[in-house]
Length: 165
Image (cartoon, rainbow, N blue to C red; front, side, top):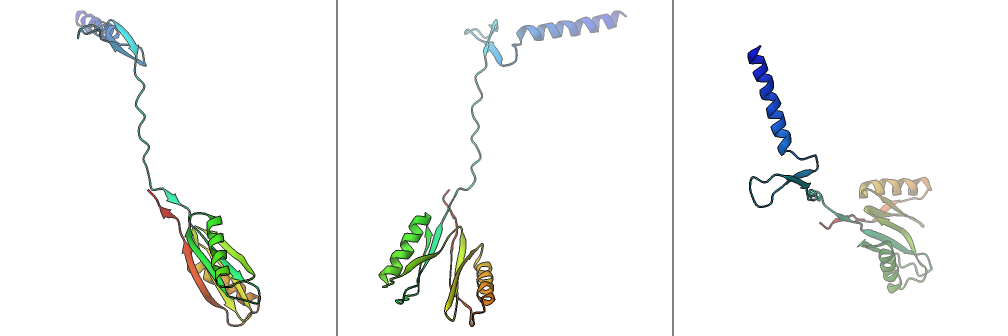
């Protein structure tokens, strides 16, 4: 019993001694210059914010297809890799008009994807999709379903997002 009492009282003193030097959660011992001075507690400084892991950043890219539907029929004009829809459309229309087009209209604007123009006798369709192959398949199906002869992919391009960081 004597040994048990000694062990129990030793644990009590260790616990009390630890509690004397400890500070409540969120506080740390304040030192006044003397390494032995732990007489008061102060608020612990806020942890420094950890930098957020940075992954790549991507910027959208736009493309546009303009077709001349007037008798002038200069064909199509395109813009790809532009930073905005407005910029892509203006560039495609400007190119169409510069070629002499009188009835230039935007046929398709697209971003972060690919586009094609499928044409047949007296018919054309602009189609966008995730890849040139997908856009071609969809455009050819639309052209063939319209009963148009000699459907073929006349133009293809992609305006895919660009990594900027």
